[in-house]
Amino acid sequence: MKNYIAISGSIFAIVAFAHLLRIIDGWEVVVNGQAVPMTISYMAFVATGLLAVWAFRAK
Image (cartoon, rainbow, N blue to C red; front, side, top):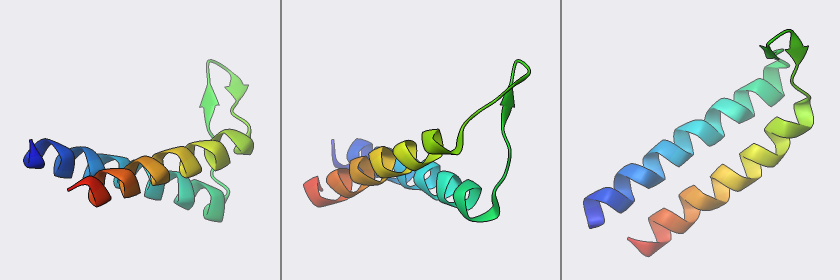
């Protein structure tokens, strides 16, 4: 079970880092012709960051 938690925490940390890079660099994401608002990355960064911290603290 500890391996699963460590892997999940690592994946969440990578996703949080990707959202942080998008926020810092201002990358534009377009899905089906529609621009994805930057607020999505702000919320996703907080959510995935908290999940990563939770996973690493549970370990």
